[in-house]
Image 1 (cartoon, rainbow, N blue to C red):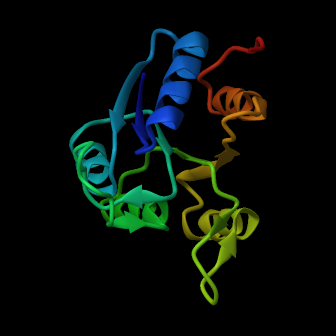
Image 2 (tube, rainbow, N blue to C red; image 1 turned 180 degrees about the horizontal axis):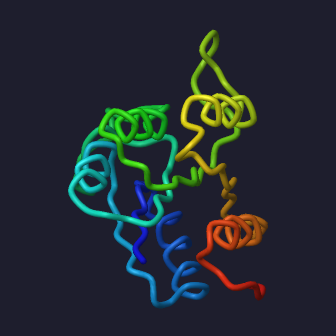
Length: 156
C-alpha cells in the first residue's frame, strides 16, 4: 500500500512522517509540497490514501524563495482535480488551521468539512486537526487510519 502526503509545512511534514513510520512502518509514503506537484503525482501514480493539507502553495518553491502563491483552499482545489480526472483514492485532510479565508469568504473547519463531504462524498474521508504542541492529532489520525483499513488496532 502507498500513501501520498501533500504538505508544504516542514515541521508538520516531519511530525507526520515520524508518526506514520511508527504506526505503519511498511507503507510507502511519498511527499509532495504543492498543489500542482500533488496533482501531477496523483494523476501519474496509484496511491491507496492521500493525506492532504488544505492551505498549499500553487507550485513548489525552493527554501530561499518567498512563498507568495499560497492557495487558502488548495486542498479543495486538489479534490476538485481528483474528481475532474476520476481519481478515486480516499483523502484525509490534515490541517493546522481552524478558520480559512477572510470575510466575507471565511469558513471554519466544521463548515469546510461539511462542504467537502457534500462535494466529494466518495473520496473525502474527513479531517484531522493538527496542533504542534498537542498530541490529540495522533489519536485522531490513528483512528482514521484504522477506519480506512491501514491499522489493526493498538495505540500510540
